[in-house]
Length: 123
Image (cartoon, rainbow, N blue to C red; front, side, top):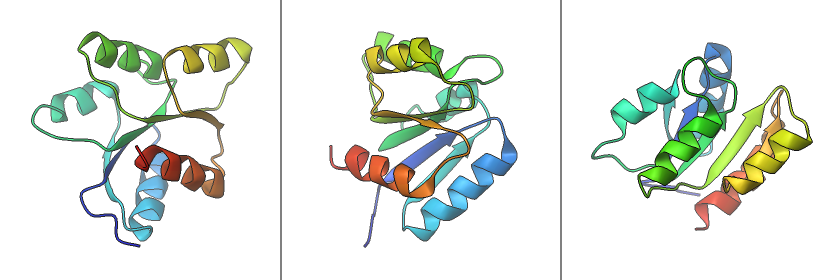
């Protein structure tokens, strides 16, 4: 399946996670742009277009939740798949309130990620 012009932005401070997700998603014919921080993503964003975000919650500097709040305040929203190594009911509730499509626990189950991406890219 060709997925032209469908840039998936992966934001995670763990280099191994970024690299593995980028490799796996590129094998699925996605264009992937990976970022270590939310600030790096925001610096890249002007004039660019992201199809969806694969976003870690716990990042240095701006958190994943803070990024979603920042984008919403600017009138922007992207289908977002959140990732976390520490999930509880409060985190799950906040993810829903901020409009995330899903919250995946780390380590990431790749088939579940692909299901979520199919949902995200259907928008």
